[in-house]
Image (cartoon, rainbow, N blue to C red; front, top):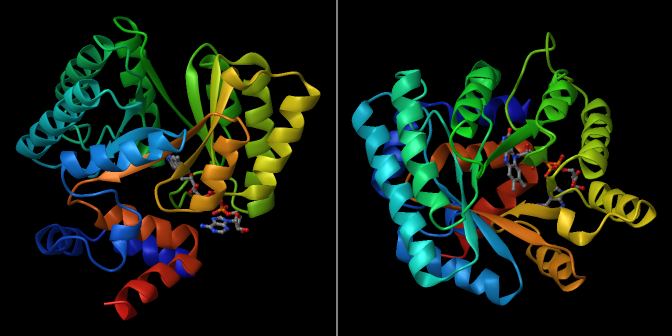
Length: 300
Ligand code: FDA
């Protein structure tokens, strides 16, 4: 039930706007790297010093005005330049709806093309994050169109969708991130139980590890991570074929441990003032994350 409440809160426009105005609150500063590019580069430097790379997300989604989407594009271009100038180990994650997918497909494509072209100059990867089901196929279409011109693009497969295996087979030659899926999706096309989602998640990860180009295994679930470690060992899959990913601020000790054990590790680093929906989705996934909020409130 709590999951539904937090997902609804994440979609509340009024609260999103208020949150932007009043800065990082409610404990969000624990899971958001900063509000400026400079703060974010500093956070990435600290991760790099621990042997961890970063994928940087300029927070925000569902732009309804062209202006918003253009501002987001400018901010992402600035991050790409800063990553290059500062020589930090990082690439970009972005959301098509932030860059105008709900406004106009071609407008969004042009925005993405400019970003992918800028990153390609520095051999930097661009990951297209996957949002809800309504945006799934349009996001794959965007990637297909971008791949006609550039090869530094990949995306995300959400294990809760029953079409996930077909999508992964289609994109086996790409660098792909595999996740369980963060949105609330209906039974018509999405697995609903934790058991079914976990089972599909493992199946997809193993498939891409065996047949895919490069696999980013994005999860905080130690049981899945242990299973992957066992699988790569049994199948002689070298460490340079995959990485583990977790979100900034979550299971920090485990992130460092995995890097120390010699696995490639990449932290998803969100930054910016549009933190509200991102933070609500984290609460939806794991209501225990409310602890973060309570600690922040009482540590003032
Ligand atoms: P899940 O939340 O299912 O937890 C499983 C178990 O792990 C828990 O029962 C607990 O035992 C343990 N655990 C989990 N978190 C813990 C914590 N903080 N502390 C202690 N124990 C904990 N989704 C999407 O739809 N599109 C996308 O593009 C992305 N991108 C993305 C990138 C990255 C880097 C990550 C890590 C995740 C995403 N996601 C995503 C989100 C993803 O789909 C999923 O919703 C969350 O990762 C939550 O699922 P988990 O697999 O992490 O574990």
